Length: 125
Image (cartoon, rainbow, N blue to C red; front, side, top):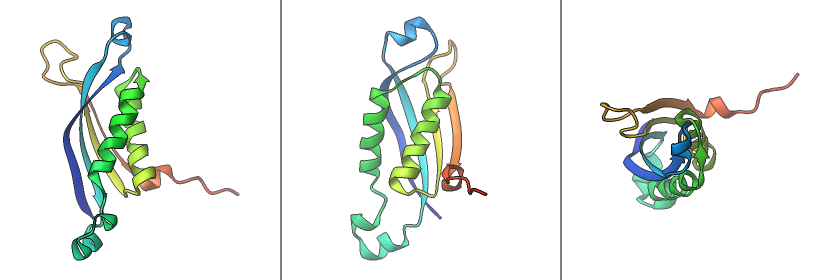
């Protein structure tokens, strides 16, 4: 698989567990690596055959700005679900950086990896 990436996508949102965090908007920064096969797109040179990273970015901005999660883990999980389910990506590695939320640290957050197989419906009986 090839990697299409979005690096340093800054989005403001309500995120955090403390009362003061629930009253303000904070920037999060996303670094996203999406595993896709780019061979067809590279031969046709047409956006319809490619993962449209602008469309992914717009969808994530819309979602994150309207969200109000307490935990970065929850937000990260929801973001990977959107990328896999709505854009057909095989695998995602997401770094969600909450910035300077911890005194003395340049950043805090979570790094998660999810694959399409994590979201398949379980087989029955």
